[in-house]
Length: 168
Image (cartoon, rainbow, N blue to C red):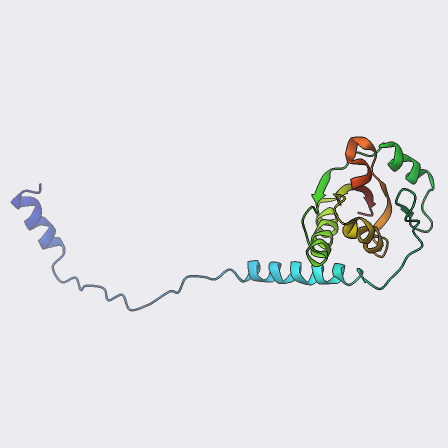
């Protein structure tokens, strides 16, 4: 509590002082950078999706293990993938997804691998109706960042998974 002397001293010091009028409104700042980043991410994902055509039929042997090697790559990469010499740094499980959902997830995976400098990724296709198991390699071979892919060894999912090397 203040005593009377302190109150009178305060009033004497404040004599002639005018009350400030606060009439300026500063609106909260909106972070436009976040909106730009999400727009940029959406464009990058659309660009990645551009490579995934459903009509393209690459020369892949459906009876044997899934494998692909980009032109001008060392053929030893396929052998290393088959043996499991590369450990996947990121896994994508596509169980239960539709073709369109799987396509979006694949685009996001490749985009993430590029941003995070991830060299080897594993895509779990599962068995199910074999729709995704057949379609995933067909999409992946179309993308210029995919260097090689091979059916995963047993340790990384076997017949139900694909290991791929990304050009980062």
